[in-house]
Length: 439
Image 1: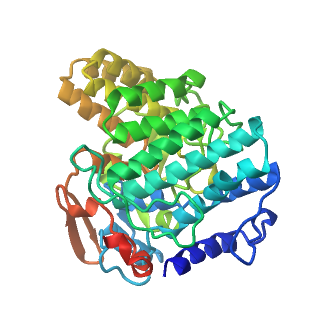
Image 2 (image 1 turned 90 degrees about the vertical axis):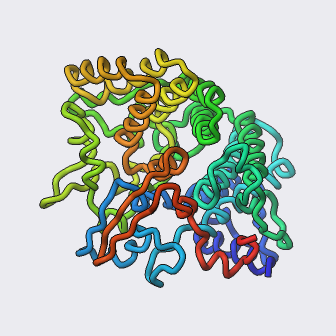
């Protein structure tokens, strides 16, 4: 059974890129790269195979409402209604195998590059990217299918780790603690190998030192390690701390891959099936106050509803950008009790997102807040700034896990406060192929 599962993974990886000469699969199922360009090709395929899961996550949040008249609504309604247990057969499944297809390429690089090539800046960069991409894939799997990390949760079921090419490997989930241990080890190894501080536009779907630090800031934030998140975010901002100023006419959207604040433009956060079957929710639209320039830049009217301007093509792929780092710093400083530093980073972001008069009012109001109220203000700012970039579900999951109600096709369903469905069930196909997932 395990041979079949892993061989299927290899063949799926091969089929997705069958025209790529770097990925010719030998009869025994082994990729044989030999040159720098071969290994770069493997990493390009790893990036290309990374799934677009965050677009579907937005449907689970308070950001969108389903458009029942859309032809794609039938494929997304069960996602919208959190029906993971027994979805309609037409429902788009959450990705599982595609993560491991992406990991497969990284394992090929990590396991063979030292045997084929001597260390040099290019080789080290490729190898570093492989470690980081493997870490990021496991991290996203953990965010989807496991509980949030805490000292009390560390022994709960994590995810299956894939760190080698082994047809006999059993993909039994490790604990959350063990999963994170592997992720953190890969991050450390990968970051130490990187030789590129910041990728040029057009190649910034790849990891760089700046992206590695941004990833570390997010990982540490999600683990509740506030000072470590601060340290990582500051390292990234030392390389580039720019923000897009929406007060400037003709400014790019902050999540445009060519924007001044983009760090890593990898993930498709707005796929056609979600864009065509949803509108912006009142909950999200009402979060923007007067003078907030994002409401007019992020959304536009479509009939009697609003749609997003933040996606629709690969220009708006995004994994990490500077605004998130400012908000990470603001949140962590609040949680550390340093409200002055928190206000500094929060106001720096708002200066670039509000009109001057509105920013002055916001800054004054923020300065009068209690610590608890300031934390709420930072989390609200995350909702506004990072809307539809796939992070809202994770923020809800790691913080208050509020009740959310969705209605569609005559059904009204409520995700209850602290609902178990904040941990997504593995896709049935994945369970069928690997019953160990339920252990």
